[in-house]
Length: 311
Image (tube, rainbow, N blue to C red):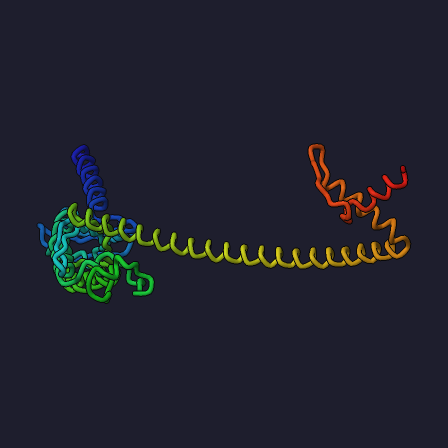
């Protein structure tokens, strides 16, 4: 009897330990829980810490409280101006009502599939309603900052990529609360052209760059001509001033030389005339020069005087 009482006491202690162990659970930070009884939800817990549940009857379903990432598959979608683009979209979401989430969705995997339908459909509708320029441009672009290639792509810019992302978030956010889900943001992660459009865009970009290069070359040639014109004008100005100064110096020197010659001539006119005649002989008579002069030639005057004095 005593042994039976001991076994019973040990059993009661073990049962109490199991009850206590299964009757409490710890909720970590970043987690939230739904308590179910035989598969039916009965309560939700969102605060971190120690919580109580009915042992053996209640089960705990844990869900993330933190923000989760949704990544869609790149899709080929036509724009309003009949241009096909590849769009890669991502979004952030979180579970705001775990009880409603468990009832409507149950698992995060199914939630990802549900968001595929909601966000992909909304993205397709928004892209279909907007031109290509709205998909590729940032919302802070203006007509002044847009290149000629972009300006010629279609209608006047209105929303831009950021505005379209905001519209997608606004529309999709109206659907997700019924599943206990909140969308925090939607982002067009990557926009790419299909192959045929990409080649056209590349050709347009090449043409635009060639036009810009030709414009730059033309501007450079104009600046070159302007610089060369200034250089030529300055050269002519400098040369003209130098020639003027040279002529003035030469004229002054000639005047001074004439004055000296005049003074020398007045001192001995006969000697000056004789010296000039000798200089003339030196210039006129060369090694193979023959002169035929009349007897009364002025050039022969001093030669006659020399020959006459010898006689």
